Length: 186
Image (cartoon, rainbow, N blue to C red):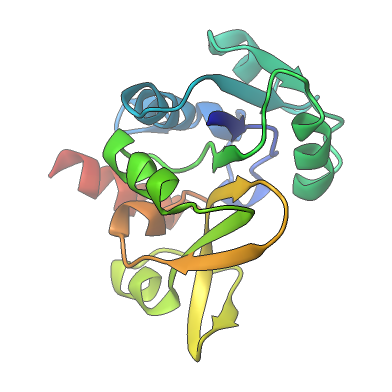
């Protein structure tokens, strides 16, 4: 399975002067944690999707780049997935998940059976950790939040809910960065 890192967002909620994927958490850029996790996993290859908002990120990474139009997550994801270097199914990972590990990614890859997979965590877990919850949806009577990790493969589509703190901490706001720093230091 190939992997696509989504690294084109402006990061306006994070309130940073620089590009969000390069925002430091515990002394390292966010995207470096994600790339290290992918390197430690069993993915076949990694491509990084950047946009006109993230030229320094494109220069920073050594992985192949696909330039997207910077028109929002879904439009950029569609543009990136059209790149012929990515075979379906494709593991997609947001660049703002500094607690991610190769073992967690491999567990999610093994959980993928066919089609597409949305990975979510209980919203209650995010609240317990003290991180922001911007988007939620109901799944089997539980309020869950998307993690920023998915498998795009076609139909059928299913949701996998995992109570995994490493997937619950995505850095969208300054408080999220503080929580991630504490986890990384412990």
